Image (cartoon, rainbow, N blue to C red; front, side):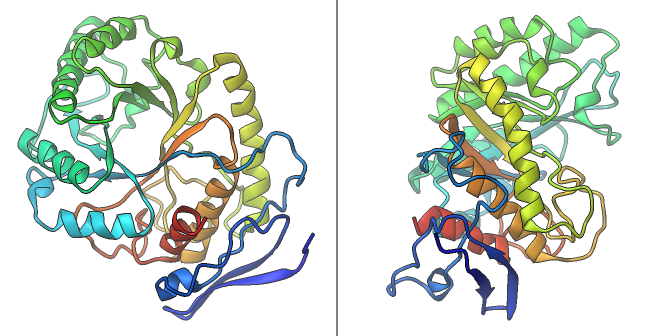
Length: 363
């Protein structure tokens, strides 16, 4: 096999991704009829794993998705969402996750409610309708956050019965919207790590199924999924794959690949027991130096580094798309209205967007 060192480059900004050795040349050079960025060959690697590893199959068919959250009441009603979704489609995405958020005051609170930061129902319905008219499949993925900034995985209500009653009202509200708008998937919860071993979820799942007649999933945090008690009651296992890919911010893509492969050993063993397909409802990296070290940390300031984000995207796509159990990947995130964000998670107008095109449009 070709073991040469090839350069991955992007001429638009005069930047280049670090050269990497090849194990497989999986992706052909784009045809001359494509746009300039698509004509730039992006040769990706499996340098940290064996070419003959039976844990990896041929590239599978899967949902190519992006989370499109909003924390504004009417942003989803803006006409500019069409432009944003067109650019995302050009990068090869065929699925989006629409993400409205309700809140509770503190981690011990018992009530969940919408605020001025919650998209109004008509806005949620509008973006789903627009996206489906454009050919997207849509997952409705409502979140619960804590107003004081506590991670939702640490929610510990004073009265668990009252909290689950409030949560049921919240999730059935969106299950009804999902059914009315013909959404394709519905996520019943996200990263509620401290609560996902409880039996109350069975009643919630049954109630959701009485309203929504398509597949449902739960999005477990990367360190939560082995402990969820109700996997047999949902259609897909969801794992938010914010696995740490390195221990230091100078790590190379080879280290990213090696470490992610080790995480996937655990997922493989889990999947053999659970015997369900897996969707990655969230995985994302900021465009900062060492973005793979703590991919879940949205508050770390960091140094702008598009290459690090692009390497993390390459790692996720190169390995996951060759897992037989993969049913979808939804990256975090894409803005409803296009905007530059040099340090943020969006891949828009960055090297990571070119990586998406290479994997999602050039195969």
